[in-house]
Image (tube, rainbow, N blue to C red; front, top):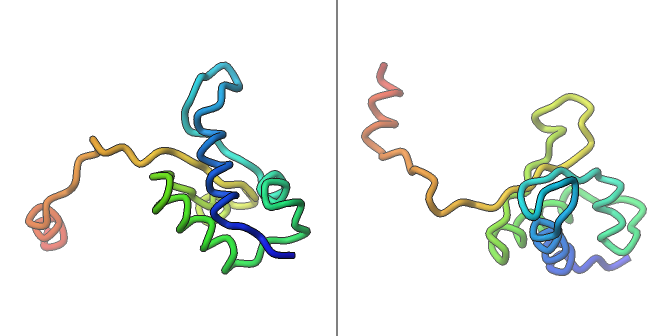
Length: 101
């Protein structure tokens, strides 16, 4: 089955802007099963396909897609949040100082 990763990323971005669970917009998590539904009902999503979805979400929609099972044991979900342009960027000299400490 051919999966349009850009369409999946677009759907994820639209969900970010959709009101549910008492919030008008904002970060959310989505199960791998529900992500497969957005991918035209794919029975499974290969690692390369997931990486392309994540890439499209970042590049085309400024959306961070974080595989939670990489962070939380047995999570089987993804966390999503918009990349906030107001986030502080750690200056290189601060990183160097911390590394030397």
